[in-house]
Structure formats: C-alpha cells, structure tokens
Length: 113
Image 1 (spheres, rainbow, N blue to C red):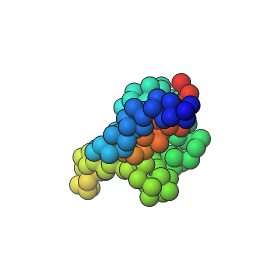
Image 2: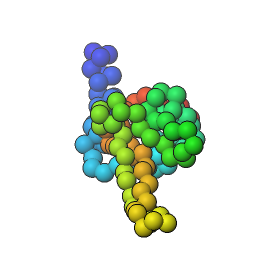
Image 3: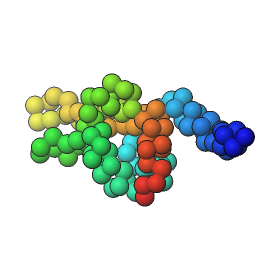
C-alpha cells in the first residue's frame, strides 16, 4: 500500500523527466543551469568534477568528455565566427546539454544549489 502511494506521488515527476528527455534541441550551460535551478558556476563546477566537461590548456572553451558525447548527454555546437588573417574560417565550439543530459542532471543535482 505504501509503495503504491510513493509511485502515485512520484508519477508526475517521472512523467515530467520523460517529457524533458524526449524534447528536441539543446541548451547552453547557462540555460541548463536556469532550468535546473542552480547557479551556472555551481553547475560548471559539478560538470568538471564529475568529468562531464574539461578545458584544454590555454583554451577558454569547455569541451565534453567523449563518454558524455557518446551517451547523448552533451553535444558540441560548432559556429563560424568570422575569418582569420589568412581568410580561413574561424570556428567556435560550445558544449550543449541535450534533453537526455538535462534529465540525468535533474536527477543527480536534486539537492545541489
């Protein structure tokens, strides 16, 4: 009986997480933090500590670890930002959180503020 009550109480939360996981599009780290209700700085610290993201030495941009990319939790968005001195395109890469990644983060970051 008590298990049935727990399942009934958790059903809306489980349904909401499933809707997020099935959604389309990705979020930048700032928007993901807003959706999760945590500070951007805290989200980035957690992602770094848990080996979701890293920076190459001398680079300001975050990169996703390959297992997180392979699992569909994170993606890289590449944007053309202009031309360099030689006329070649300059590219910028940005880590994006997928709906599946947001669902996992929502579960793991439940108590993190």
